[in-house]
Length: 473
Image 1: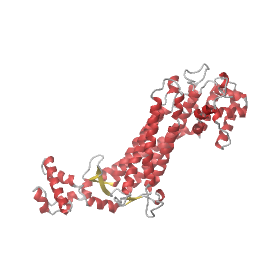
Image 2 (image 1 turned 135 degrees about the horizontal axis):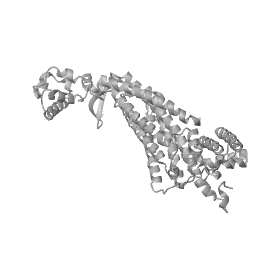
Image 3 (image 1 turned 90 degrees about the vertical axis):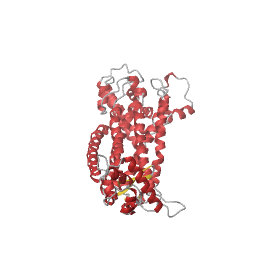
Image 4 (image 1 turned 180 degrees about the vertical axis):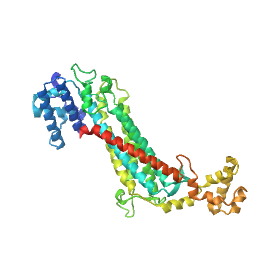
């Protein structure tokens, strides 16, 4: 007999049990469900809704159930549908009929919303921690390569030389914004829906704020309909996760390119590459490729959640059972990618000489020749045209700008003097970008100093918020 089966005259069709049950995936919420139940039953006793002795019996039973689930000794069945009903059934088996008092003043609707928030806020702290570790790895590579120059690209064509450290710091900045978005979303996740009941609250004199405080929430979701029916906090997480994995995917693409023979800019450690079953010479950047591929998986969960919610009336609808698998999978996908990326970046060999050789054999200093002429009072558009002619001449002669003699330069403009060679040297080109956010060495060093400060702030945030979710450990 179902725990809710009092008004039914027939057992549920087995196919219905199989199709509608969520225990195969929502068992991930087991410990969170039990923690929420422990706080709920304490409140029931405090408010004298159930006797204190019954509450103590239920608490002991819940702790036993928690240990059995952890140890894999509890039988979780589709007949009991979901983790909430399975836990309650296990509790009643453990302590008898008194276990049936646990559900007083609550519904599975507010219960599942609570469990998801508990799970997600825990995951957010973990993700911030993993993002900071990746930032640290990128920052260490930047610090080790403050004098390493490589071609910067637009349209995948060589554009202007930049410091490798500057390139790494671009990703540090991207992941910093990812961290900020997650941190900001935490306050919207960290609100307790418990006490909203099925949709309208409850007739029992419960204390919602007490439960919220016991579970280290910052407050309650004030409207009962909103508390049980919206999953915007899940959508926000999936959106933030999509941005994070998009940044990882872009970095993955660059690692795939840079580690190829055509670029030969970096060497990924053997521990983060795989081989070919047929071609013995192959060393494939499979981790980077797979992370790049998994971005589509995360995007799909975001679109799926938005599509599920878009036509739902308030309040709870069974469609909302689809809110969990995508969230769980996204958390695990992003955690897995970040956990791999930090050591992969940390152990990456940067081929400084190859990068510099690439810069020395291109026209990425052409803009500086134009700027040089502008500083001689030639309008930029005219300077642009002159340099275009110089580059064309070099291409036809299979040489580069620094290969030209001063006489060659002056054939195109009498404004060019001997100091042009100092201006067009790769390091001079890099250091000429001496503006806030530019690639000049001192500006990149400033970026790294600021990044260090922000990393310290992120670590403080992790420490504070880990204590908030530690009730679940």
